[in-house]
Structures are given as C-alpha cells and as structure tokens.
Length: 429
Image 1 (cartoon, rainbow, N blue to C red):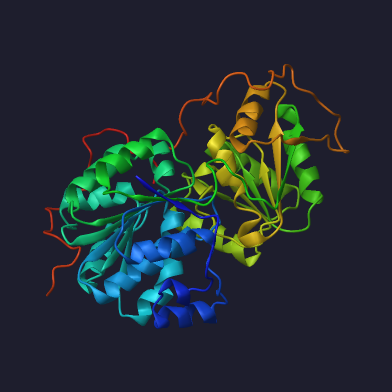
Image 2: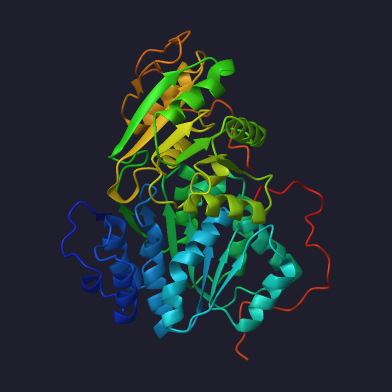
C-alpha cells in the first residue's frame, strides 16, 4: 500500500489541483476557495484514477475530496459512479453537496435510501442517472428485485466504511461488491482504520494510495472537552443546567432510541425547543427534525449514534454526550459535529460513577485526558473506581453498536414482491 504525507500542503487553491473551471465557479459562489488537507491530497490522485484510502476526522471535507474528481471524470469519460454510505442523512448530505456541480455538466443523480418509496426510486432510473447514492440495505433491495444493475459502475465510493461495518452492513457490502466490475476505481473514506477496513482494502483495491491527515482517534483541535460525573437519576436535571450555560444550538447524544425520545420530551416540557432523530423515526420525521435544527426552529437535537456522522450543521455550539457511546471511537464522531471547519466548539460528556473504564478507553483513543469538572448547580460525584493509566487496551464493553437508450442503473424489473430476505433481521438503514 502506498502512502501520502499530508503534512505539507504545498500549493493552495482548487485551480492548482486541476479542478474543472465550471466547478471552480460553483466553489467561488459558495465562498469555498481553499482546499482542506484531505481535499488537497486526494483530488489530484483521484483525478488520475488511482484507488485511494482516505482517513480524516469528521468535518474535514471528505465529500468534496471524492465528489469533485468523481464528477470531473464522469464529465469526460464513459461509465457511472456508485456512492455507498451508512445512513439516510449522509446520503442526503452528499446529494445536496454534489448536485450544484453535477448540474453544471448535465450529470443526473439518484438516491436510494430506506424509508423512501421504492416506486419513486425505480422511476428515477428512467432519467438515466450516472451517479447513484445509496445505503447498503436499500440498494440490496433493488438488487434482489433486479430493478438496478451495477455493470457499468467505473467508480465506487465507500464513504464512512468503518461505520457501515459497525452497523452490520458487511453482508450487504459483500453482495454489492459482487455486482460491480472488478475493473474500476475504488475510493474508500473513513474516520478510523480498523482491521476490517484493511482487509476490505486488500481484497478489493489495487495498490491503494493511503492518505491520512490525522491519526485515527484524533479529535478536532478547537473543541473544548469536559467530563462531568453524575448519577443516572440526576442526568436530566444536569442536562438542563448545562444547556443553560450555552446560548447556541446543542446536539445531545443518547445511547438508545427510547432514551432519545424520553430526553426530547423532557426538554420540551422544560421549555427547550427540542427534536429527536433516531431509527424509529420515519424518513420524513428525520428530515423535518434535521431541517428544523438547521434553521433554528429547534435549539436542541437529541440523537442516537445513527446521526453521529450524518449531521452536517455549521455552528453547533455544544455536543453533549448524555450517555457515553458503546464504542470509544464513536466519541470522536460525535464531538466532530461541533468545532467544524476551524470553528471553536464544546463537548460535555456525562459519565456515571461506574463508568471509569469507559472514560479511560476514550482517553486512550484520543490520547488526552478529559477535563473533569463538577457543575455548580449539582453536588459533585466521583468514580467508584478509577483504573490506573496504561492498563488494558481499549475494548467494546457493550458489544457492537446497536444499529446493527443507454442502459442506466436500471436493470430488468423483477416480479413485484418486497425484496424480502428470508425472514432474517435487517440492519437499520
């Protein structure tokens, strides 16, 4: 595997990277003039058709890093592109980011996500889209019904690949890989680099260029991180006190869907305008909550980890970990929602007296100690037992994350049916 050192940016500006003048004009109108480190390192190599493994923390511009060269290659060459990502929110985010550029060169896009109409998605295929953005579960539904073919895919993007594996999408990804040609360009992007990703890269990529702009587990430089130890029964009161310490928008993470619903309800009763977003909400409800949060109708968004990488909202003042995540790596993704694009941000985490080891796992991953503090409105609490530094390696104490003409993408239509999977349980989409 080749590597690339992203520590020396070199020339600046998208023009120096070889970006099409049509795309430069769109970037300029959006006030984007300087590429981020992951964009600076990735775009030239991607334009050359190289396979790439891109590793960067959230909020660093990975969508443009793969999206701009992908569009530029499709504008001058035959073929189609498939972008696979873990959640509906990320799919919508990618479509919103790339659509202004695709429109300039007449490239159509289609989005396949769970919770949306299969019939409407089939109709999209009649428009001959050259880019398909999809979540693994819904794409497999179409593959089972033979309403889509991936035979002309020349560029495959696996975005947030580690998250897709955490969510239990490995069987679906394996099936998708069986349907795309072996001769293709593969761009794999991730915030962390577990062994499963290395195995996937070795099996499916050709001499990939590894571009890492921050070590795995690196958190945003300008995010102030704090830890408050609190008893479980006092968390709701503490949350309200912490929210009063800040004036801006807040993103609150719950470990469970039921917990997110309970927290949002309690906050609304207390006079905070809050919305919830998790797997039990319909696609329409999730879009309304996210859009309302972006536009300021809701000051607080309560979410499970399904939203940790799918919320692209600028200006979130504070991320509050009401519950610590199941996996220490998710801590990085959660707090990456604040302090984006060089802004300052705040992250406040609640830990119960019995969670000292979970906190230590997070600290080992981020290579820093979380600043402990007591809230002035609540009696201070300490850990029941705090393990020595060093100690055991990080591990998942609760198991895996709980979410477990021209021929276009359209293929031969199947004979109705719901694309069932023989009765086995599907991962959340």
